[in-house]
Image 1 (cartoon, rainbow, N blue to C red):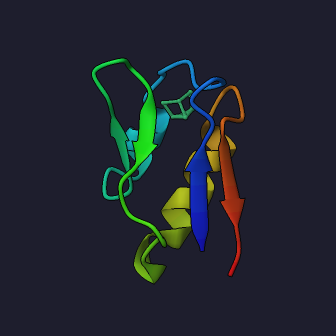
Image 2: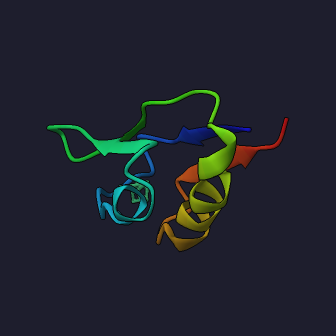
Image 3: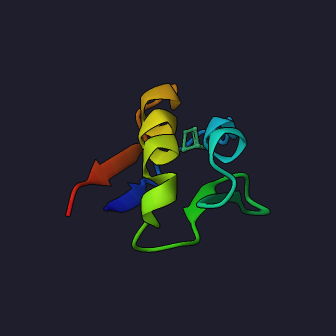
Length: 64
Ligand code: F3S
């Protein structure tokens, strides 16, 4: 599974990092980046959850 953050849409709420810190990381500009690609199987559920919880739908998830 692949996950992407649209930096233009991200408002830096950091919910994704809170839900799945193994995959999402906040930059100094308060944008989330994806640090593991593809997403390890054990973190897929958390990534899906993060995508659902993002208030501005900046996270897109792509199944393999
Ligand atoms: Fe940005 Fe959404 Fe994460 S606003 S910091 S991608 S939860």
